Length: 369
Image (tube, rainbow, N blue to C red; front, side):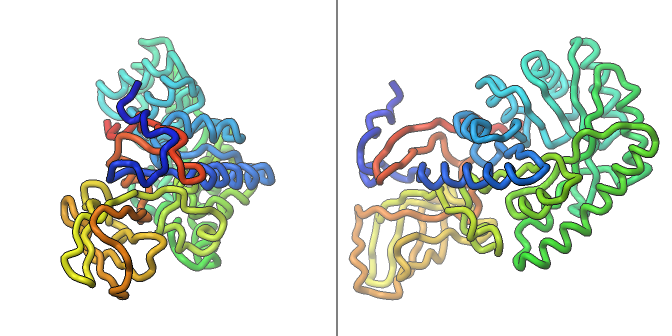
């Protein structure tokens, strides 16, 4: 029995803080809403594990219709494969002897697929896969404007695709292009127009490769901010949306996304000090809340504004001095970035009807290798 299991059945305000909460009704509704959308289009959903890092949630997404999962790192892939999920894309380059060794060993227990954008990496993968007698599925990643990873479109991509098809124990599946620089752009028309323009280089490259006699079965991309833009394009076969499962304050403000899904993830905090009538201090600082997309704010208290985070403390300013909060009181805070906030915690408390229904350990927390 885990030390936290005794909280099951208790009211959420009885939890020690800081605590990471999932509103299970909202999360399950988000999963179903996304599944309902993908039942209407050609593309399939391959949700990203990097958001929740927890096999039970991945299994819920697959049960609702997802074809598999996407991972950012080998450690995430290990966590979900060890939990029985077979169809896994690592939407990243796996480079170096140690990591490639882990990859080919995973291939003994899954249908693993990885992204590549380098000829030497392809050769290294082929040699390791041959030595282990496994098949590694390959997507060539194309840079469609994010300027992160990805080979340039058309000829450079064709050269890599040709190399993969000639390499033993590698199976060329298709292309990946991620429009991550556009997914939180506000104004759906602007975001849609720019997304479609960015994807033109992906489609042009796919045509060029197929015209050179190489079959493409997968065109993968997309995120929560573009799920119904990229997902509506017939050529796209897979969407890698992740944040929709929880949402956060950033996505809540994105037109056409924030009105479709509910925010299911909050951080429960405790008031530890009210030194003045207009200032409250809570026990949630930068070690439990991330702020790269802005300082997170409390819910249910419009009179409160979080104005600063130090290591262990959150400073809140009160616009109405009559607000009845005192040391020991609990309040919930909405993260501005769900993915990086989750990675700060060991476990979730699943809440239904304001009571703790389950405690889920974040198996892939800290899996950055």
